[in-house]
Image (cartoon, rainbow, N blue to C red; front, side, top):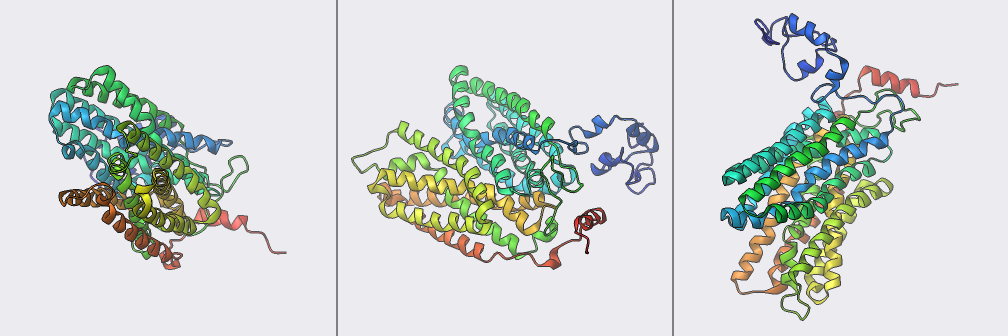
Length: 499
């Protein structure tokens, strides 16, 4: 007889153990019905088993330092940030499997789409089961994606690479991306922008590690199908080990009121569920803000090397392939630095003000490139670096903005739903820049004129985002849900007694 056994249907008495039975609660959360026998076995399992992997989220013991949580988040984000280094595999795949540039980009594009979808649909599960469960799922999916891709490369079946890296790995990207966000905000209620910036900085900087590492592997193993397969295999196993550090290290804060040894504070402010949040105008204003900001940034990032080459192709200061690659590395560094720098600044000047900077100054930077970029290489590079720092900063600041508006109750789930804006922008930004550049080239134009119209569109999109940001107001109390009785009692005890 298994865990469920006869008569363990959802409506049976045996299949519905008491909610207060702590030993079986993890199985109930996962939808696994238990018979009386199953409940007896579960009750005898050691607490450590119930706290590991997909089981109950680990609660920090007294005296646990909250500064151990950002490294746990970084171990996951630095790993899944490899997605930005996919371009390293494009030329070898095109050569070994006879693919076009569009075909070789498919795994990355599907991965970004799945990132947004899995974050949206999995956000509630992440909130319910905790960061350790989410990091475990991300580890399994992301690493398995590489292993499936290794099989595809070894057998020269490209659809397996698309399935592995794009679909399965993309689910790992989405769950892994949002896995530490809610926990970090709860550990750092005083500095939520800095906390999420540290973790999300890892996603932006992961390519700085993965790109040379992957290139060195392909050089050592060879850039044929067997060499690519071996590189995928090493990636999958290595990232599984590295991400497991985060799985083992992460902790959630204790629910009681603030203590001096942890620095955390009892939850205050609004309390809105993910289901209710998507019914508010504030959510959709922030969706537009994020989509417009990401579209503007990814439009440059996706086509950075050919763009700077085209801009100065008709001048006396042409750009070599090596210099263009260096420009891409600079953009990655700006992307990473913006995630921690600008998000930390938002703790000081406020979220709305920092997005005014991202969107308003970003539009001015695009205008400067369009008008004067081809006449000054330093100006072009400086403006592009500023835009990419705003691109990274926008990602890192949005969780704190959500926390300010909706509270910490289900901020991870709300953040996951908002990331559908990223999926949209991931298609929209490259489509605008590439399609217009192709049409302009067909019309006989060259140099900076290939991008004039697309830059004008980007300026318009940033202005739309700026207007949406100005429309953001505090969430109406009718959308709030009451705090649980215990939290309300804790908050009441902290109130000063009247004289």
